[in-house]
Length: 229
Image 1 (tube, helix red, strand yellow):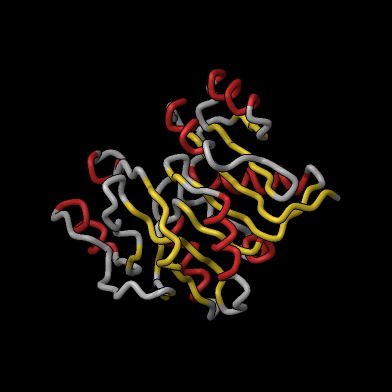
Image 2 (cartoon, rainbow, N blue to C red; image 1 turned 90 degrees about the vertical axis):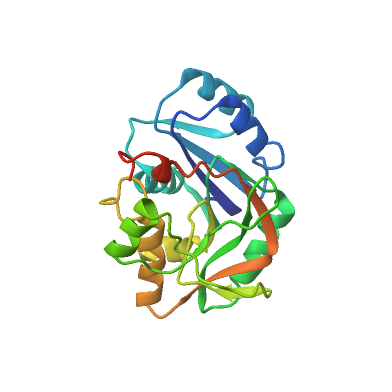
């Protein structure tokens, strides 16, 4: 069985080549990192680009975010591969290898099961990625009244968070396996919230390391489209 340090799982749906080129500018598969992409839009142009980067590509019908990551993970294990960490990564994240290594250090604490960096917008402002676990009323207020799920934090090094945005989260792969990955009843949105809730129900922690800052070119699609909401 070939062993890696980090398995990076990425799920695509109608993403642009320019966006993917930015993503893969600073990360690549090597002897310690294995990257696999599930493309829910099965775009042949995307496949050609991913293949040129020596990254595993899986064509798929649109099965959603959580199911896409689960499919990536199952394919990784079925291929006879293993890793210590799994990094769930959105295609609109800009991250480098040094930042990935810093995320890994947080999981040396046995009480921490999910770690995220502090997400920033392109202009450097901090995103509302550290969130409360919302009620259904909070969700409606977020879209209809433009309320936020964010709570007020002092940005010290480590922040215990009820719920972090799933654009960039790392776990030990054995912990991801122990909770059977994402709940596939969530097709799009809230699957990251459910994952964090599951961690808390098992008396473990979700944290943000605010010294690790990565850029997230967040589209906020669910706040612009009532259909997506």
